Length: 629
Image 1: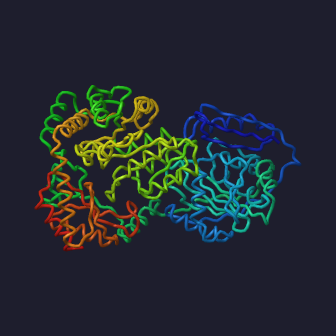
Image 2: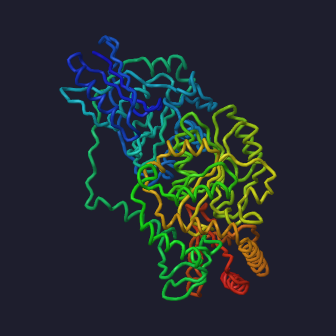
């Protein structure tokens, strides 16, 4: 018999691996099959494939019967964590779920598995970066052709069966790092192999595994030797029979029904007018108190006229990506203006703020990076961190002492620290001087998201750095959006020229997206031009924020903000929805924000102030809210 191992990588990052134990006559066909798998994988196209073929003696092989198989349904990863909690209690880790799940997240950046002592939660791998690699295993075959397609279930149960029989191992948790496979498992010799149908979201590249070890059951050295060296063939694997459903989309109806029952179902309101401080919605005129267009530049005649002129000259679209046909002189001019506005060497524009965060973070960080992220960061930051496959460490909200404490645990390391400048659901402001000082002290790349601070903070609206009087060093990377104060569309990143050049050449969200329309780019350029020249806009906005907060306070509602975002905390999701609808009927367009955007039972009305609101309009709106509060 021969062991055949395949490992595929792209730019030294692991993307695929597989191994088989086959008779000599199958070596060539199986090698071709594994090569095909390595060349085409959901996580990337390999630029390096390593094949190892090794002869093994029959007497070296241990034959094991597969673990018994069962399946537990989970609608989402939160339900899977409840199942995992019960499993951990069963192996002696009752009450340690949070600690274990925090350690489990660290496995996402590992190539192998974590070996964890259940008594102390101490990691036992000799090489923490590599982890424990379980090798030399396969299933028993009887004239069965090997496919190039990965059989997740078969390969997982082979590995799980071997792990469960290793001396000292009392259990395992596993999530595949394949973006297209969301089923994971827990296993032990006692419970067998338990499939959990949904342990992550579709498209997530995150995955990892922990082996739980008990010193009462074995010796660490023997355990590792068994996992890495013992040749195993697993017999009698129970095939998975797909369940037959009358309606293959029945799960969607079930999930939507659950959202409605818990007052978390999202419904869209339709606006039948241009967006300004008043809009036509629901057949009536409403005062807009939910828009991120803080300076009301969406409806500014100067912006509209310039955009219309550009549409007649350049047309409606760009025709391609920035690196092919989508790079006009308008795009270049906008980036030059953004760089000047943010006092940086260069800027790059993306199609949305979401893409800007996703592309920038996942390009700058990788498996060898530790990302420190505020626990209340925007979803686009969170998703960018996940996509990077870096080790993600969340620190307490806007707590610089906790940030420094967490950095000290990992420094020195290749690190990125990322935070919102103004937090989108609470409206509070990042402690920028301390943030930048800590990043620089520990040689971390600092990145801030200025989506809600550009055009709002600072005497002339230049953002959070101006708000703090330019008294600290500039953050390394300033990200922002053109869809809020600028009233147009797109996201941007400002930084040193070499960083921007790197993103142009490496950021997939930039390279593989058709560029923004010249019309959109022109609208953004004009809006920035107005923001530079008409500084009275910012004074009016600050005055309106102050008036509205004072009006709410006069009715006993706790509200204090220096930004255009003013949350009115309601708590219960159902009550927040009812208030939203009653205010809508009364002529006020205000959004109720609920889980998962905010924590459960932290539902709120998110009021957004514009520079063009009048004091009377805001005072009347405050009274309408107070009457329902």
